[in-house]
Image 1: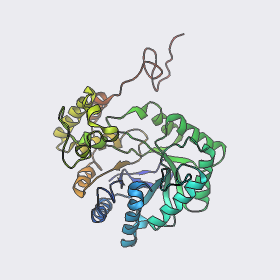
Image 2 (image 1 turned 180 degrees about the vertical axis):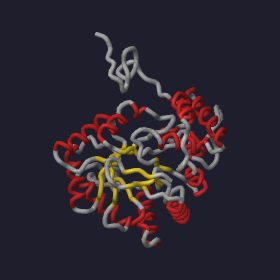
Image 3 (image 1 turned 90 degrees about the vertical axis):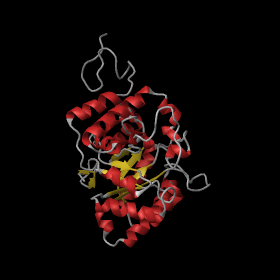
Image 4 (image 1 turned 60 degrees about the vertical axis):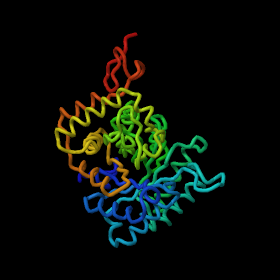
Length: 342
């Protein structure tokens, strides 16, 4: 396992993070404990959860695991999130001070801790003024309930605005961004990655295997079946089978990943995770496994370093389509200084 600082902070975390969205739903408590134990034994130090994962059950499982393992709390960095509905009331959702106060206190109770290391806004809230949310984070740090603040699923302008407001208002900074990011979904490189590099914000990618696509288990023109995410529901979420299957780029990426995996004698999952872990501004890649066996396979990426040639092959195969303006076209370079004529 390799280790990096959490964004621009001095706190160190493992380059792989154990995500717990499956806990209490697809993974029972015994299986969840087994994953947590295996992750820590492998040198993992970063655990991510959220209040809406299994409607609080995921946090409760993590909390019981912490209580059953004396001393482990000092070895791990715990992250959770608030934003989405946890009840029927008008103020049981959003990023307002009212909701986040209730949500954070409830998360602390479920986790059985006095403070969480990283508290994240799970998504943008168009109703709440951003300074209200940022001031809540600052107050929570001052109260000793959280150590750092982060956001998830923000767009480029939203993240940049948050970063600038914390500087202008002298508030606790945003230290992490949790976006969807993988070899099949690289659009955050257009704006979000440059913001993170410029502001010292660490990226914590979710869905690093594209809902299972990058493991190589899905086949062209043959809808999946069985006990997998898309086998149970082929049109589930952003990884829906029909849409991905119809894109030639999907199969070009999978062919490149398979080629590297076969040459290195490792799984396609390991190759995909290793590529992502070495992307600019990435702090830690969030793993999401149903079983300990799946987790073991993912953990093989912890110390896997791809060669420059392997990285180039994957970069070229997965390059996202770029519109002529403002990201491409004659005379335009995404990160260069060349400007269009006229």
